Image (cartoon, rainbow over all chains, first blue to last red):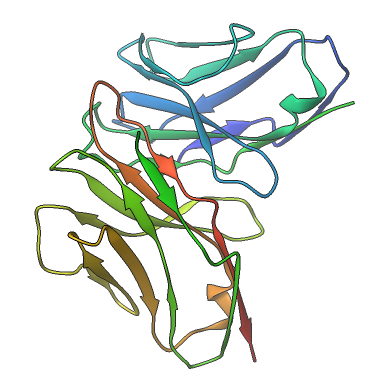
Length: 114
Length: 115
């Protein structure tokens, strides 16, 4: 079975631009979470979506938004990019929403903002 | 606040030897899950092992085992018979539930395996 997939793998943008990152969860998984991993640090939680509804949001500005589609895939959008948005963006999926469920990660999208 | 601390930024081990990575955490919840994830240079975060707080028996997965000390809020990872492929960044993570199923990660330990 295919794991979590993310696209694109790498992205270069300039300050002020907008970016959209995509994620497809493991088949059968209905929950998708997004994390930001700045170089040298552990991942930080951005969003969780379940059944197309936002179920949690981390401490990130309103420039960050996301959505989940009927097929459970998800997009993360970041507007008005700043240099500090340069990071590895990880998507994780799980069957449901409870904390007992393990999250499985995709390979990530490396975003560089110049 | 829930926190996870990994006090060893880097560790090194000889091939075939055993190494232990440390992790401490803080939570006021009575039930929670703890995880070790491995992130090789390829970036893919891979689950190594997980432990439920209510289970007293330490989890094991082949060469990987944990020492879970609930009272001390300690969750160390032991890697036996280390292999070159074990070289990676290792992250300890906590999921305590609440309204959101989210992982709280430590800062990671970079493990080097010497041939």
